[in-house]
Image (cartoon, rainbow, N blue to C red; front, side, top):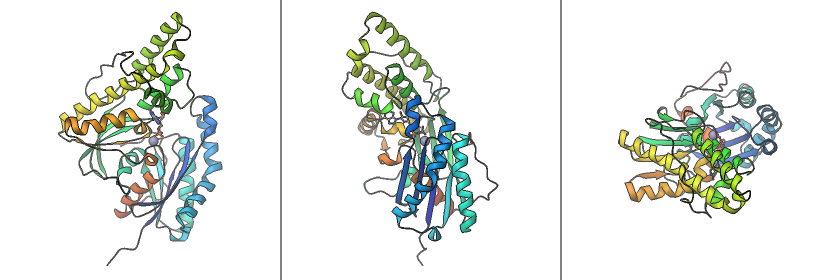
Length: 340
Ligand code: KG4
Ligand code: ZN
């Protein structure tokens, strides 16, 4: 007997993007994201503005996701939402909406950990994208997190390394700010890095024991370096922009690769999946692909639209939880920080 299809409506509102998606089993029917441009003027996400913008965006975004999927509310099997981690005011908009809709439609409510979702995005069925076999190592790299995770199964994961200060996305964004580039600067550093010499300016890599990361020292080193050079030549940044960006990116990629190599050695697992906004970075993508040849790793890089914050990744976890009947009632609470 074939199972009837499962339709999941997923909502993601943990930071500054309001997103909704509809999945039919592990296939994405729609994936809608409303970016909040308001934060660019402030050089970073302003929590109060983010929650207000989520309130304005959530109804039109969910409407658009249902329309695009050509699904009516009555056909939905369950509602999945991001429980955390994230900004409390932002999370509450998504969870309140999900709770109300699940009550109104009398369908199950599913709470999703945003970080699990970045990892499990690899299990969305997409032509041309392989799904990793368990166990694998996940490197989650975003504006909020930097983690190495052993993934043994959909619900069996263990963090074996993480940042002790800034996330890798912050390292990109803060370096960009030092260079006078607008927020978020990660994609711009990437763009200019592709035109420059990665060995032009060597930056010292932090010494952090084990599999943990630290990026705040690198940021300070870049700041002092730029200040010193600009004092000697006020046009230093303009004249060397591409080389500075290439050198910063090269250093960050090396920091990530050093720890990944160590993690592969310690765990004996050489399947590596990346997730989070920084996995869009061309330097990381290229270096990981080279590692397949060089070290015999198998690497998994998600489709671009599933790397930055999106609701399809919440939906795929929702689908797995639906299959395992992992449901919540409306007493479930949002969590700014969340146990893995
Ligand atoms: O996953 P994400 O969309 O949101 C968080 O959960 O944080 O990640 C956003 C981060 C930002 O720091 C942004 O600068 C960075 O991802 N980012 C990049 C690139 N594209 C996005 N960093 C470096 N190179 C890129 N191409
Ligand atoms: Zn994220």
